[in-house]
Amino acid sequence: MKIFDTLSATEKEIDVSDEVRIYLCGVTVYDESHIGHARTIIVFDTLRRFLEKFGVKVRLVQNFTDVDDKIINRAKTEGVHAHEISARYITSYFEGFDRLNVKRAENYPKATEHIEDMINMISGLVDKRYAYVSKNGVYFSVLKFSQYGKLSKKKTEDLISGARVEVDETKEDPLDFALWKFEENEPRWPSPWGFGRPGWHIECSAMSLKYLGTNFEIHGGGRDLIFPHHENEIAQSESYSGSNFAKIWMHVGMVTINGEKMSKSLGNTKSVDFVLKKWGPNIIRLFCLSGHYSKQIDYSEEMLLETITKWRQVENCYYELILSSEEQAHAEDLEGVGVATKESWDEFVAAMNSDFNTPLAIGAFFKLVKYANQLAASERLVSSVSQRILPVLNDMFEIFGLEIPKVTKDEMRMINGLIQKREMLRNERKFQEADAIRKDIAEMGIVLIDHKKRTLWMKQERIEGSG
RNA sequence: GGUGAGGUGGCAGAGCGGCUAUGCGUUCGCCUGCAGAGCGAAUCUAUAGGGGUUCGAAUCCCUUCCUCACCUCCA
Image (cartoon, rainbow, N blue to C red; front, side, top):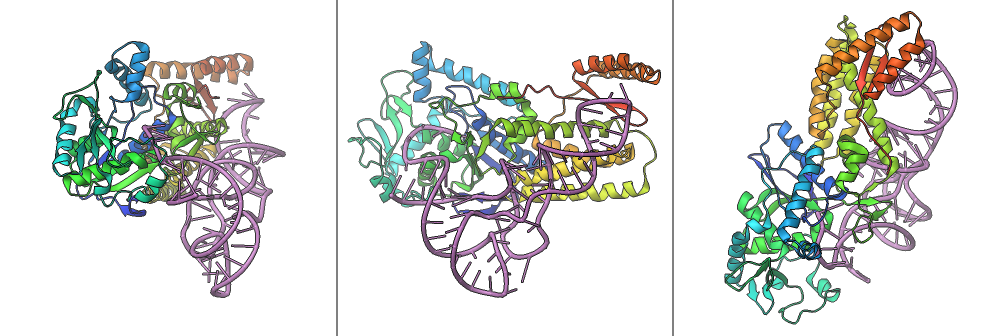
């Protein structure tokens, strides 16, 4: 599988010879997660699901930044401890992402639980003279790392001239960034240099090294983290360990809304909770994968509504498959289904292998859906044919993390009972009464599909839509 | 100002030297007691503008214009 690596600006083959170690920069827990976070996390969740489908062992580590100015400020405003804020939003994170059907990572290290590791790393950097202690904290000497700028393709000269940061006289060089900031107020931790808090970048360096070692396979995150966050991580980590940090840097494009980046200041964010209520997990996942991961996608009602239409096709297909009749299959269909499923699957895999091209892979997925629906429409989708399609379709469901809402045995019994009753009424041409039953069933989210000889049904996910 | 990524039919989105995906939408049909869903057909010949290279370019080169992101915390 090839992935575009931001650092080398080329597509690189993922090394699957052993386990695939992935470090994903997670969220700062000072507020609700939004659809932008969701996209990045869904991309990586889908990537790991794809690799795992082929038996590759994936170790995914995703951090929580739980010490940060924003958290502290919020805590002050609310008059609570900082850890209450972070705990609250970590809980809400899992509520949201579990519902989005995101598989749990191997672990979710928190910055506050790795202060020792960070201090050790900073000490190492100070010893190697990559870092120095100043009045306000411990800083990394950017110019000592000659390759600084290699990820973001920035030249240190340009950075200095274009610097809009207020000049901090206590730093040796304006480019230097904090590893440790001295702090008088809580939250703070003791260190060899004095009480304080770690800088943002050091946490990812320390935790990735601890859990995944050096030169791991993939380091990921949103595009907006390339500079300065990931650039700084590289500088620290490679200066400290002397070896390569990560083999592939994979960056996910931003989610915009009506063409503008989502941000708190513009007040145009859509929280995970909100979009789940509006659209549900399947629509959101499909939407997040509908564009190539490296490009930005625009959150718009039209696109989401379009996705609902597609999802209805999938639901229909699924129920046609699982409820197909036991009749004898046409010989040519038995042959054709093998070709069709193989074609779709091969296309699907090829697309995914080619820099995680999910829009193409979704195309292959819908090709199979359409194929099944075509057979169903011409009354040829019988069980023996369905059995050939279902496993492939299920694999695709699993990789995309899509789930058809389940129906309980009781519901099923009731549905079948009502369908029989309706059939009798229809045979007696008592259509009004038959329609009343259909309406009742619809209340349960069940839509009836009348075929020539029998009626089957599908459960439609309730989707509020709009917004 | 610097850096990077882009500009493809009404919309979304592939293709990255020849064979011009795909989906949604729209229109008309089929199916149905009706409806929903489904199916079929038609519609749309699109590749920001201008130069080049080539037998041949959406695909390569030059140039102009435009969009977005990053350069400050950000997934």
